[in-house]
Length: 133
Image 1: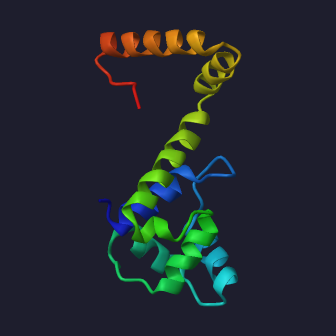
Image 2 (image 1 turned 90 degrees about the horizontal axis):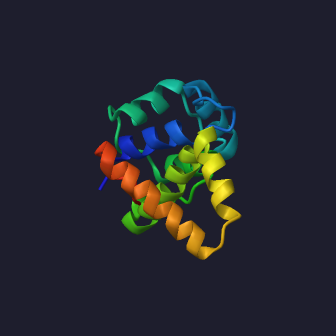
């Protein structure tokens, strides 16, 4: 089970609509606008680094809304696991080579896609990595 700080850090690292991490100022301003509750960039930094770890439910709701995830991400392990899988896919798809492989594999039939998976697993085994889910 990931800590609150780890979850917030993951959101910063993977939810990047501008091709970069949000700044603490952007997150604080966005959360303030969503809740009409004051957020400071220092407070966001403290939450991300674990120096503060007991935010109010409204703060978590604002963070969830800002990063466009369910607030359950912060409270429920099953929800967090599901969202983490989606975030991993989003992060992987930022890589042009991964996108190219996915788009090409999508044009194959089921047997062709299974063959590509076997090839990727074999290359991963030869490289000493575990490319499977």
